[in-house]
Length: 386
Image (cartoon, rainbow, N blue to C red):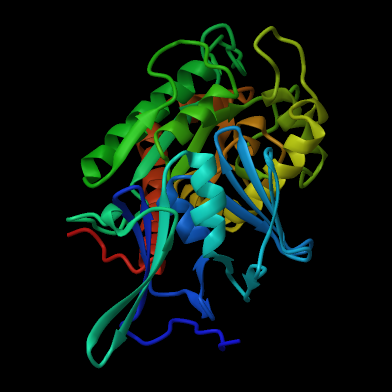
């Protein structure tokens, strides 16, 4: 058996084709004998599907719509709803990436997506480039003018909390959370669009009711790189105040975070939905694994938001926390929920509804998002936009 080649020669590359379109070019890949291994996360993004892994069980998942592909590394098997396929080689697990054998793409994912997938190794030798292709279609599928799909962070979806019949929290004068969150979200959208190079959308444009499940679904449909849900807190004690930022977890940082998640997870009819009713058991497991892949990015974004908010807010910094918010648990991209303050605190309600203060809040949120974008793009090897 030939030794595994990571990176191969400096100029070597692996290419991934979907139909006639070149969807990804990879400098990091591995080769064992005649098998090409592609990086899980980068290849999944190139195909426009979800790819995630559980390092403890050594399991790998691809998900496209309702179709799920499960790889058991220990048994060297791939399972779909059509049955089980044996693998010659198991996925290769490294410190920070999982490499998937090309047959998973060319035979299994090709069948799931209903379109030919081909993987090629472009090996550079003294006589030029030598192709080593694998696929279930002829070489006529080679595109005439293909280009690798790049995945910069440039699509932002902002979710104004509540709306329509779901008013959210209310201040002593009758001011509603749904109105505050929409005003801040609209200003944040305009601020980010003014930056240039970004696509920015809202989950609701007016006072309309949008189901919790439809909010992250819209973000997925827009291929969002960042999802940020904006809220204003409420509590029975008017002395409660401060700002906090959440990212998803099946468990909560503390009881207050859990109570808030239960409140925000309420269904449209007004019935309270406890976290264990948000998803079925299997959905919770898969959702948790999917979130694991974006968990670090979500936490990094949450920390940036909390840091920037601390520079403009004069109230208590309640920190970065975790909780099972449905709107975050259903998201497959880096996602956070920001509580900008307590509407039930008369002084804080006055603060976060002041136009000048809202402008500062928007600047803080925009600065955090832009810093996250720049750092993530730099990690992906993408130069900052001029």
